Structure formats: structure tokens, C-alpha cells
Picture 1 (cartoon, rainbow, N blue to C red):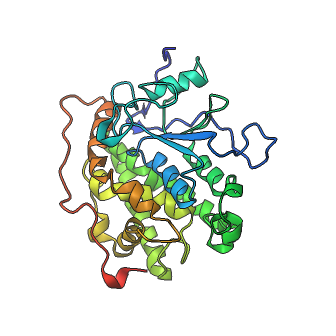
Picture 2: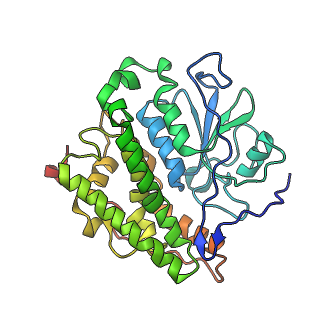
Length: 335
């Protein structure tokens, strides 16, 4: 049960992200391999990870808290990766098997596993195995496959054009997701984990060009969200990066050509409208309650990760600030 294959994150000074490995699907079809059932599945995640953050936002937006369990690991990695240690109110042990490390869960699913031990993990408690560890696929399962257990108003089909991935917007959402993932979601990592100046330069300018492009989209149509008046998958996927930008990526990852709060008027307002969403019927307060408890810890987690991935020497130094983690919404900015 020891990992013998070394996972390579660097190639010629460039950060490379290996693909996820467990890619099965939960289905509303009761005859499928992994049928949707209340209480059968659990999400394992760390609140520090933006990919995992997507899944708890959607779980909360869809009102699936009583249908899919949530097991929260430490917000920061240790030498053996993600762990249960009770830090900052997280769980002290895996509630199903008593494990300390996420890697133990991977080995339970596959004793010969040689990939990365990543979050999120969608786990089948009945079959005692891993269903999926790719966030972009997990959130799409959550949109629709458990709708039979939800009140009518929270079902994706009922929402129609106001859904997270409405049919008429799917091509546009997929197209935006593609370049946002490459240059923004993963772009910050390609900057922060670069080990050569040319690698950093090759990624930092495309990152800010894409932020400029997103600013232009919001400014151009004047609506609160990326595709209009309703939150879509594109907003969820972008949000978890922007939530970490000024508090961690700007400092720890040196993505400091601009900041969101000072240089992107429309993108900053978009972010704050999502973050300060308490009382929202559309989101159920999902963005605030999955971000506010952890946003002060993001920089610490990334400082440690950067030292590990880039093989840096010396102590981990965590930058302080900004003094105000998220600025409030003015009355005339509220929806």
C-alpha cells in the first residue's frame, strides 16, 4: 500500500497538473452501477482546495445537505497529503473507517493505486469504493441526478433557463469554462508553482488577459452574473478562484500585476454579490457559508503547498493581509 510512482508536477520549470483517475457517475437510473440514493454517498474534501470548493457550493445550492454526507479534512496539507486532524473545526478522524489520511481511502478503493491523492472524493458508502474524484463531473451529477429527492422548486428541470447549466447556454458555458480553466483556474497554479522565470512570465500575462476579458463580459452586458441574471456553472467554477485571488494568489503565487478589488470594478462586484449571498433563495447562502469560515486560511495553505511543489528550501512564510478579507456590498450594488 505504498506509492511507488513519483508524481511529477514539474516539466522544464512548468507546473503540470495530472488528470483525475476515478471517473464513474451516479445516475438517477435505479439500475445503474451507482444509483442515486439518499444517504448512500459522501463528499470528502478540504475547504482550502478550490476544486473541492465547487462541489460544496453546488451541494448547498441544490439543498443536498441531508442527502449527501460531507466529511471535511484539514484546510492545509501535511507531508502525507490531505488529512483528518481536527484543525480549525474540521473532523479529527474519517467517520467511516477511522482513517487519518486521505491516501488511506484511495488505497481502500484500490490497494494498487499509484496516482494523486486529491480532493474532492465522491464516495459510495454502500459499495465502499470511490465513484469519482473529478470536480467538474461531480458538480454535474449534483445538478440533476438527485432531483427526485428534492422539492420541485430546486430541481434543475423546474428551473429551466434559470438552471445551473440550462440547455440553451451549454455551448457558451462550455466554451468559457475551457479558457477560464486553462488561464485562470489553473493559470494561478502555473504561476505560483513555476520554477523558472520564463515559465512564470508565460502564464502570468495570459492570466491577467483572461481577467480583463471577464471584466469586459460583465461590463458589456451589465447583468450581475456571467451569463445574465442567474448563477450558472460558469460562475461557480470561476468563483472559487476569485475568492482566493486577493487573499492568496496575489501574494503567495505572485499574481500581482493587478488585484481584483482595486483593478476590476465589475469582477469585484460580481464576486461580492456571490460572497455576500446570505438570505438568497437562488443560492441558499451557498457561497458565503462555504467560504467565510476558511478564507482567512487560504494563504497559509498555499504557502505550504508552494514550498512542497517547487521543492523550496527554508521555512514557510505566510503573507499577511489584506486587512479586509472581503469588502462589503454598498446598498446600490445589491441585487
